[in-house]
Length: 291
Ligand code: NAP
Image (cartoon, rainbow, N blue to C red; front, top):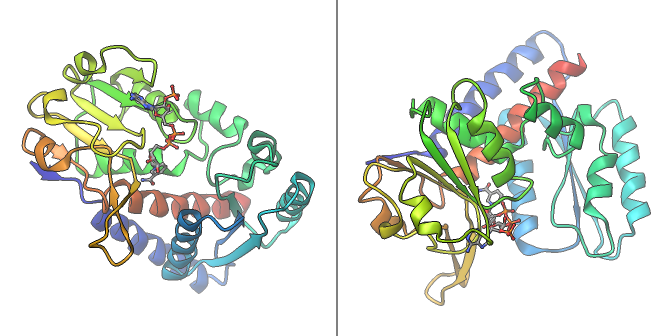
């Protein structure tokens, strides 16, 4: 079994980006600038945003964190987005999800300038991705592709089963694994909560990408020998022995599934760090395009 070490690969990517930024500075160019907007006080969201800002500092990007209260109205958020769209200093920005109930997420994502949409959530960018055009690929699927590529995991002609059809992970992943090229050329099955007899499907999979958010959902008896397993899930499971009061768990019963797998990602240290590295990569791309 080979561990797909997202922590190591994401560090390699950050080092590569740091070198790019140093070259930009030497040429007297402006360094990439990422802004992140967070609405409300959700603990997990605050942690994710903080790690994105920290990652910007690590590679030499400029970053701006915009915190808005839980009671922010849709109009107020749309105004802030307009401001960021028109600010020439900002190369790319993200709106941390989920948003409070009073705000229509789709409306907000549609308001982001597609050229600054480094999360790749705008329908124009999503459409371009589906049509194999150059665009911003959503960071988590982009990170999974990068892991598969850097470890040389064969995807050509393989049966890939994606669990979960969210707009940010499962759905784009199913499109990307089925596209022409490497990683890609897979035969893809996209499963969700209405899928019947999922065990019969997963046991036929050469590659499983699990993004449903149910701890230990994928058991050893649900996979065949030598399967490649990508565990996207991150759930906080209460644990009194942990100083934080919880532990992070993936969708995969790692202890038992790893005994059958050829490649597998750990949680934490797998897909999570890759997501942040690819957000940086998209920001670099946004900067280069704007020049
Ligand atoms: P989500 O919006 O939470 O949706 C979950 C998906 O799983 C839905 O499509 C749902 O089906 C499906 N599902 C639920 N129960 C199922 C079952 N028993 N069998 C098959 N499918 C089932 O998804 P998400 O936002 O992609 O998040 C999924 C997990 O990934 C979460 O733990 C999240 O924290 C994690 N995540 C991690 C990263 C990272 O960087 N590592 C990034 C994003 C998300 P329906 O559509 O039918 O409801």
